[in-house]
Length: 135
Image (cartoon, rainbow, N blue to C red):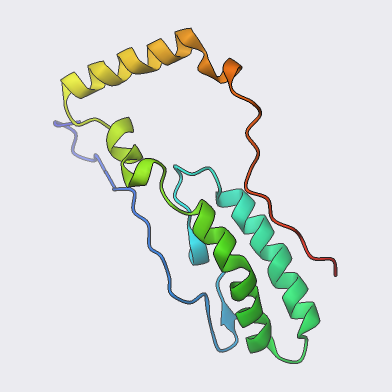
């Protein structure tokens, strides 16, 4: 890596938008509410957002601005629940140590967790529910 002439590195970042639409243009999926690859919610939010947006466009066929505002009003609380990076934003720092000592600690921890298999002792974890509208 240090000697490579073509090594590329980009940090993981998250941009939170104040509004997902302007006029007749609306954002959906990662462009609107990118939950970061560390949450595992990208596909879920994209599909849910498309479904909700479609229902609002059908409901407000003559007024897309109203459809976009209602889409955001209905979906924003759910996005706010699933968008945060786990562990208060410290998960990337824990999973990407920047020293050989940190890498060693991470490997020991992951090996220990794999050996203990604690997930066997937890009840099934459900996703945050969202009641889909009928349209």
